[in-house]
Image (tube, rainbow, N blue to C red; front, side, top):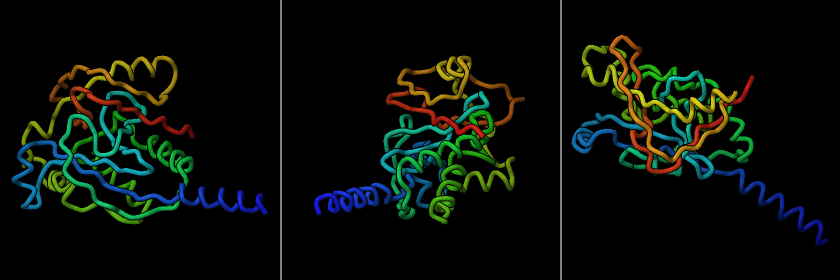
Length: 218
C-alpha cells in the first residue's frame, strides 16, 4: 500500500512540475515610452517566461544561438514595465529545455534585425508554438510600421550598435555554441552604416547573469 502511495505521489509531483504558466515580460527601451505607451506606441523589449526562467533574443556577430536566459522581470539594461499571462502549458522542464534549444538553432545572433527579426518576433513565435496565441500587437508595432516604410524610422533605429561578446567568441573558438554565462561588462562597438541593420537587446553593461542557451544540433 505504501509503495502505491509513493508511486501516486511521484506521479502527482511530475504533473505539478509539468504544468506552468507562460508569461510575456515587457520592458521599456526608452524613457519616452511612459508618454507614448498610452497612445499604443513605444519601443519595447520582451522576454518569454517559462518554468521560472525568462528567455529573450539578442544580436551578436556570430552564427550561433542568440537566445539567452535571465531571471524573470530582471533583464539587465532595461526598465521592466509589465507582465502578461499568455496561457498555461503542460510540459515538463526537461521537455521545454529541448524545445528552447531547438528554437535557439533558428535564432542565431547574427540573424537579428530590428525590423524583420527582433526580440519581439522571437517571443511572438515562442508564444504561438507553446500556447497558440500571439503576443499583443502593440509590443512590436514599431517593427510592423518600419516594415511598411522604413524611411519613417529615425536613422538611429535603422542602424544601431552591436555589442561585441569576447567571452562568446572565445567559447566558439573552443569548438561549440555551449551555454555561456557572463557577468562582466562588455564594450559596445558601432557598426558601419553599410552593415545590415541590427539592434542588440542585451544591455551595454551587464549587471546580472545572462546565459546563452545552447542550441540543439540537427
